[in-house]
Image 1 (cartoon, rainbow, N blue to C red):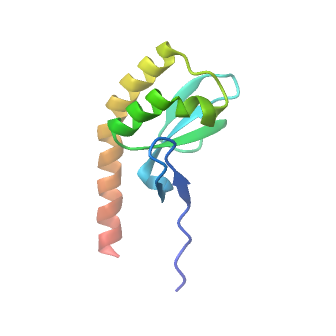
Image 2: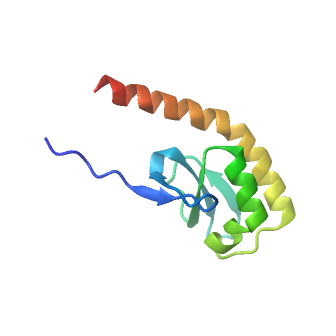
Image 3: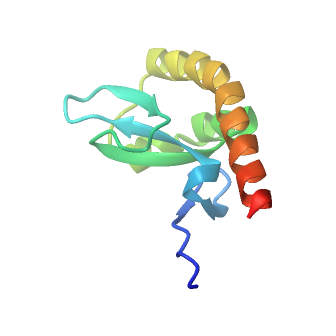
Length: 106
């Protein structure tokens, strides 16, 4: 049986290539709103970050999200994203652990 190709994406902060499931997507919607997309299916321009806070802080420092989303990300948006990122980090890591357990079962 052939194995499926795993989609890879690059973290905008640390520049590491990882599977799409290991990264958190930040999306600029068509209306211009910037938010975290855990489903990976919201429409709009996306940028990917590793699932740890250090990469988020590095992206903020280097303005990597501004370049990737091709939009100016203001300080208040970064503050909101920081709160959202910390809130969803645990949920994201739990999903990752569950996915790793499923992979181990196969």
